[in-house]
Length: 254
Image (cartoon, rainbow, N blue to C red; front, side):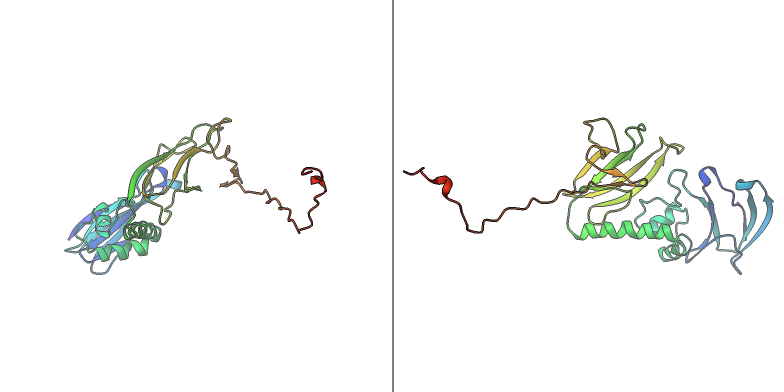
């Protein structure tokens, strides 16, 4: 048998840890005891408001192992978006040798949002590959400038990119926040872009003449930018019903 100590205290930016107990064909997450597999006992509790935490003694049966993982400081994710297979996820979580089906089942049960993002990225890439469209990889950093200029924005075929995969056009391979948060924090995106997709790099606002959403007629509704609406009505074309007044032509051909 093996023993380990685990503490569930949060770190900066509210990043949480997770206890993963595993065998080659099964994965468990959390601090519940598992009969015949692991005995988890809380040994102490530190009361400190938001930073309160418990310490556990974990006793593992033969053939069972465990690791403690924590959400990434920049992304807030337990494994990076660049993982495109469950084997890659297992490697990122430092539980290599575990069946891909076992890690998939555990992630879908305990981290459904992570699993949903994984499916979205993989399916979008498969769609691009099956369409036989060439792609290119780009890195784009969305930063904040000044109150007048605002943030950098990216238009994809005229649509505002909101940090999510756009099927058939853009696949978000990864995203990571830079800095300590606040107004001037930035996010770096790794994107796979389909050939023929037009990308335009602008800012939210700026000075007259700057290429910005504001200059192009976009409006901010308090939560997001809305594209300009064409309110001009088509001009009605006068129809000639056949009653032509030829009096104005009198005398021209005499």
